[in-house]
Image (spheres, each protein chain N blue to C red):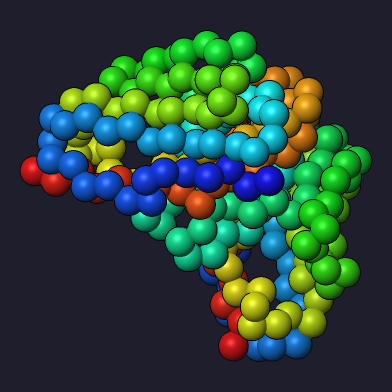
Length: 111
Length: 114
């Protein structure tokens, strides 16, 4: 039931783009994205609901493909501050079930 | 609002001892979650509350773990007879009720069992 994230790790230079994927074997109701910096708590980025909507937050956006049960997080023109581990959290059924988190994707942005 | 607060930040205990952690959620949030995170892994669900009612517990949670949320305010997580495998970061999160709310996490309590 745990969603699968890919890639496990990625290294970018400032200004480059990245895509992080999150796939589920079960029908998804919602997908949350969080970023966690070393030694800190995960911080909420955005939520996507069943319906295939796309959301954006500054230069970070995400999409939800209901047919594929997959969400993708897009980071464009990456900045040093984007470094951290990105987790997707998946919600099932009505969305009232607790999130199940993937193992994370470690993103390192270098100058 | 100061966010989600967890105490203590760090706890070192000897194997076999009992430990208790506290979480103070955002006051207007009626949902409270406990997760456990080990190095290199995502948060793993333990249990959650809606107001004072404990609605779900992970099947992975042994009977040594118990959680309460009296009066729907703060919550405590107790681990009895700690084992070395209990060493982890214990995260608390809260959210409003409804499908559009993300979780706000606390800074966690890092437990080390020696």
